[in-house]
Every structure is written in structure tokens, then in C-alpha cells.
Length: 346
Ligand code: FES
Ligand SMILES: [Fe+2]
View (tube, rainbow, N blue to C red):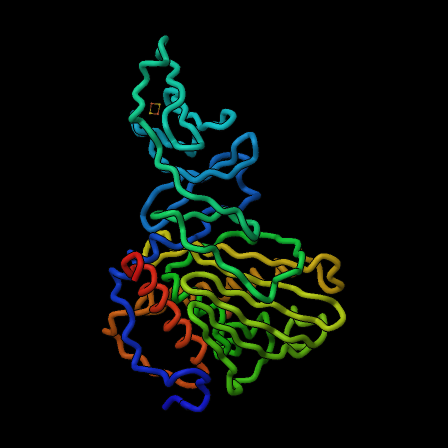
């Protein structure tokens, strides 16, 4: 039985989450990372909810996300080249504007005024944030994520190697902030950690969930910077962060943002950041250790059944107090779907 006294807000209802189709529809309107900023020296491929995309940077420095298939004869724009504020197809060299995707040059035509203006790449909204390029498939994108604990702090970011994981977004987020799996999945990287989980102080407000826990020095390789407070912060549908607040060294951050290539298959984009002037471990070392932790999770998370949280309730599950963060994330996800699909003005 769940200890209801641990739930600070309303009592936990039997979770009646969104149906899968509703979740998928809402996810098309959310922001998702599709590339690392550091990888845009050449056009990069991405897949978001089944849509094949190209991500590139124009000469003026702006990041662009467009559909990947050339509308002439299907060339792969990821093999193309950037020309100023346009991208050129590798096959016959047609160029498409970064601004709106409309064909801007057809090399084979002497009279450019006759080019087929209906030929265009679909162009998606872009935000470049936390070392990554983000986009939304439908609409202009909702308000972007904000992390209150980072307000007024200047961080230096380093993006990790994206990790392919055969899980859905919610499973990936739940794995990132789950605390009961440490002694079983992360024994190598973290060393022995307690099996018993203390009463978790979880709070949810709308789409965000927070939890504070102490990190005690000596708990594994990465805990060499002394004791600190860990602030967990998640926002539905897709970011999970931990901010390590060291009283005498400054703040360090670890973030994960799984991006749904398909409903049950994510590319986990992630990164680390140190407050400028941080006096503890270097960013490179932080990144190295975090990747080891991630790679311990991948085979376990990737073998879960089902691969994405079962919003339709067809699978048996039982929850205990250590699952409080997960349960609150599911409520937040539910609210994300409800809000996103609500008719305008309602
Ligand atoms: S296929 Fe792209 S220009 Fe011909
Ligand atoms: Fe883990």
C-alpha cells in the first residue's frame, strides 16, 4: 500500500492516464531536442516521432530544422551542403531557404523565375538551449521549459554522446530520477548504496515535479566533491534534471532529455553543466562518469515491458512509497496531455 501521508498535495487517485493516441498527439506539439549544438558543422539527421528531419546551421549561425526529403526526387538533405541561408540537395543541387523552406535556386534552370515554388522543405520552429537544438512538430511550440533552480546562475554546458534507448519518453524520464534502482543497477559506478529509500519529499505543481535529497560524500566515484544537496526537477513531458548544490564549490547540473524517435524508442540527449567558477570536479570528468551511469541503465531500461508507460492500464503494476516521484511525473504527464489537447480558449 502507498503511504498516503507522504503525498503533500491531493490524495493519489487511481491513475487514469491519457490513452496512447492522445499522448502521441500531444507529444507532437512539445519541444524535443534533435541535435547537439556542437554537431552542426555539417547537416545532421534526426527522427522525431517518425518524421525524418535535417538539422543544420546557416552561415549566419542560426540553427534550422527542416524535413529531410528533397521534394524534387527524394534526395537526402543530410548529405547536402549549407549555402549561406539555404541548404542544397546533394543530388541536383536545388537549394531551399532556411527561413521558410521554399526552393530558392534550381541550378538546371536558366530562368530562376520559373522554378517550382511549391517545392519546399517543411520548416519547424527552433530553440537552441542547454547545448542542444530543440523543435516541435506541430504548432509554434509551447512555452519552453524553465528550471527555477538555475535562475540567475551562469552555467558552462557540455553535451553528452546521445544514447539510443528502446524505451519511451516516460520510461526514460522515470529511470533518470528513480532512486530505488541505484544499489541494483549502479553498484559498479556508485558502490554500495542503501536499499531502503527514505520518505521522499516530492512536490508537484502542474507540469513540474521537485524533490530534494542529500548526497553524502563517498557514495561512489562522482561523490568526491563532498556533501551536497541534490535538487531533482522534472517537467512533463520531457526533461529531468539534478542540480547538485555544494555549499563551498557552487552548482553542478546533470540533465536528461529523451527525444522520441518513435513512441517507444528514444534518443537520450543529455548533458552536464558547472556553474562558472565551480570549484569541484571538471566538466569532462563529470561527463565521463555520467555516461558510465547511463550505460548501466540502458540494458535494464531497454528490457522493460512494456517499453513505454502503459497509459492504457493493460499491465499489472504495484507501487510503493519509493515510487512517489514516478507517480507524480505520471500525473504531470497526464496534465501535459490534457492541457495540450484542450480546445483553444478552454
Ligand atoms: S533530388 Fe534534390 S535536387 Fe534533385
Ligand atoms: Fe540509473
